[in-house]
Picture (cartoon, one colour):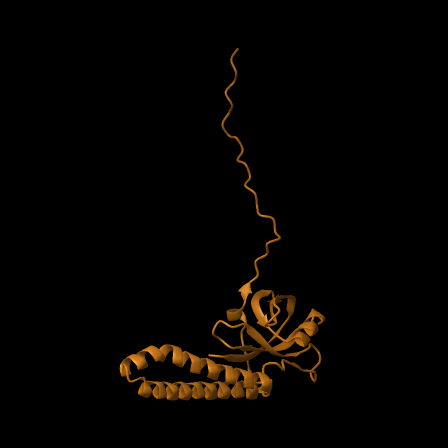
Length: 200
């Protein structure tokens, strides 16, 4: 289930890990976020932001093991300035994702039901093929419609940031483990047994 929330935080140590998806690693309030998605304008703003003040950040968690997305950022001390992630609510991306979901559902229906349907009808494939075409088109269009409704809902949510609730980033981050600290070395135990005296 997708989640929409905001929190006041400081984001530092941004490093890009996936150039195709604009995914980054970052430190958020001292904790590590391994997959954080944002647009380049948000990235450049956070890289040059004042580290002493907390910014209000709106997060969108799509679920399904996907990266946590920064939906918007309000810089510290700038109540009327708001930077939005335009890629989330882009109508072109919404249309592309809808078409892609429909085509994938249509193809998956053919791949999964071709053998059972044609086997059921046996040699009379003239009745099986139209049924398969009808099923694949109906399922493809149904999935495309559901996908469109979902992305339309996300688009509406992105334009109503003031209605989002405050949330906790702990489920999406990990405690930072410093690797630069030297590991304590074993201290050799003092010899407590007296050494035997040498006899001439």
